[in-house]
Image (cartoon, rainbow, N blue to C red; front, side, top):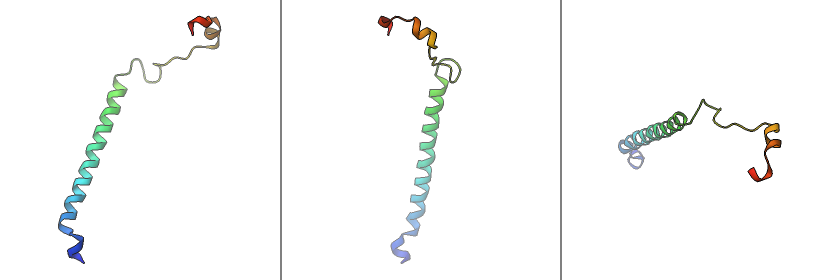
Length: 63
């Protein structure tokens, strides 16, 4: 039974899967950090919604 489970090569596969997971985590974290650092203004203030008064003042042709 041990012969069919291939214990010697299983360790290599586990290490490869673990390293792949860490590399993928670094890529996703790097992309997230890059996106966060390149946005204009403070976090959460780059998109401003108009107030009700500003919406009423704008003409229909501006929309």
